[in-house]
Length: 362
Ligand code: COI
Image (cartoon, rainbow, N blue to C red; front, side, top):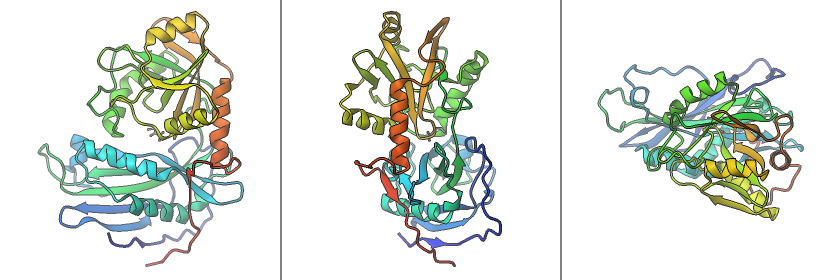
């Protein structure tokens, strides 16, 4: 693998971030790009000024969806250091997603280095307010101009950066989630555990219908029996019953969330009884009726921890904590954001430090 060649785009004006960042609306000055060709492997790595892509209209990913992506975050700690949260785990997940749809693997240390270089160059774009972050979106696209259905032979990996605030319009207030059984998002052995746009496309209609009913998002049931809860599409889901915290077991159709994994670890560190298992909707409803359903919350890179205030299913509205975040969700949110900001000890070495090294200008 050749060395990274870095170009710098000069910015004459200082970065000025708007007071309300929203999510995914603003982009930094630079992108990382790298190409893949069978005879060369991954090559042509560079960091350059952000500009539109020039693509042939027959570029394969547009037609057949051969795309994988990731979402991770960089933060500025209270002592001013720049850190990325669990980047290796994200790059490994990118490779797992790639495997499922015939995209070539990337070299994990190489891409990790690329992430650090890119974030270092655009570090002035990292927001410093609590709960905000620099969202990192790596993605790989099949880039051949060809209309036959087969894996592309050439690919492009691109990494873009976006300063973000809360993902949901509610901010960090509880969200309303609707359990969906009119459509399915994914089935086991399908693409569900793969971070690929098809899963998001599959979720759009249901999410729009849920929004019309006043809900923020959809909680998906399994695609076979439509009996067990799976994930929200933008978050994994956790349920706090009276004596147990549970989250759906990874079964091939659920995204193996990095925040999900971190939350499971934190709960274990705290001595909480956390179990990964199948959770039926019937169990949730019956525990709600008995008064044993204490809290529901989602976890995700974009959402961090999102308390579910109301969980709906058909005409039933399970009201949990519609106004303020649930107790455990809030505690986890504070724990994670304190690790991000360097206020809490990073006992699991989840933070990768971005060196503030001068970059070579070519
Ligand atoms: C993330 O949490 O990073 C996601 O990918 C969810 C969504 C923004 C697609």
